[in-house]
Amino acid sequence: MVDNPMTGAGRIGRLVTPRLELRLLQVGDLADIVTLHSDPGVMLGRNVDATPEDEAAATAAAWLATAMATPDRAGWGMYRVGERAAGLFIGRCGLRPEKQTGEPELAYSYLTRAWGRGFATEAASAVLREALAFGITRIVAETLTDNVRSQRVLQKLGFTRCGDVPHSDGRRAWYRFAHYG
Image (cartoon, rainbow, N blue to C red; front, side, top):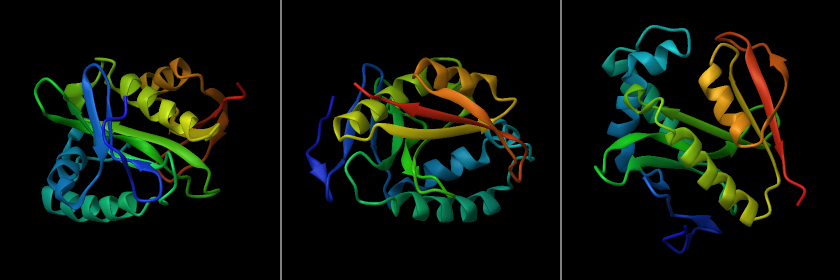
């Protein structure tokens, strides 16, 4: 469900699901992104030790600036994901340009306390519905090859694994989504 009117040149400001509220990231979300980048489980998922808090703040600030610079196109954007009932931040999800090709890439990351509860699938489904509503029919995604949970999320959403690619933090499983209906 779209709750707010479009912002910018066609970006939805807020998406609501039965359990979640997604809104486009803002500068004021830096503390939440630092929390995400400081979560040892999230960072271990990237095959590195947890980032010390001051380093996490610097990388989170750079990450947030890049995320907010997502092209102002309909259906694109990175959202802050929060639980509606408690109002608590649990992660981020959205479409951003893939670094190599510029194609729309579904990207998400969640605090470890939110894992295993279906939040990633629920939020990504809302983002995909919006993308399809704006005519985005081809989307890519990647995960670490050993991140089976994330791969299950992508498969539930209709993504197909196309192979593996080398990456600085290990091999990545590469996925594509194409909607022709």
